[in-house]
Image (tube, rainbow, N blue to C red; front, side):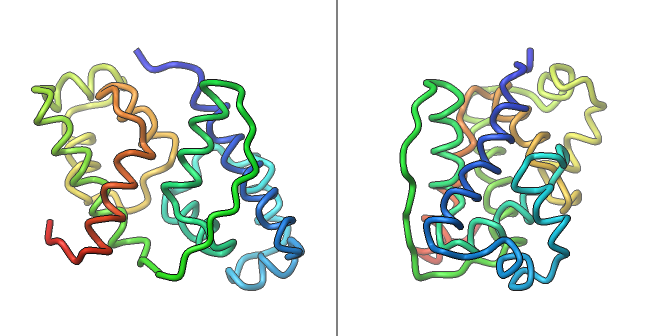
Length: 178
């Protein structure tokens, strides 16, 4: 069964983005302009007023403040599961296309699901969705999958999202093929 920590996790993501942006003396207006989105929309993202935000947008937000997506998600997981607050400032100098990263993450989810012998039917049932919808998620047909949905999947397969993202980032860095 999917837990209620997902909303806390999404809130933590917004808080971390805001903290890192402020630590780098970047105004929210500058950040929104760099991303090509409106300042009010950017503010809603940082303040977790948009619950169904895509992983692509989250990845762009992280990239915008020079942290890896896996570091961002790790810190969010850490805050939700241990109430531990850490000052995260992890700069990196590589850029990953969000769509490519998403495909690698979905492949990691599939590999993890298969390694644990969990069927797509089981995941779909636990998420209260039809199996075909889940299959479309895992195959990458749904490119606008929300962070919320990904967190649901990772709770069912019992593997934190940040671990899957970190694996995907490493494969991209090392130019591994999926």
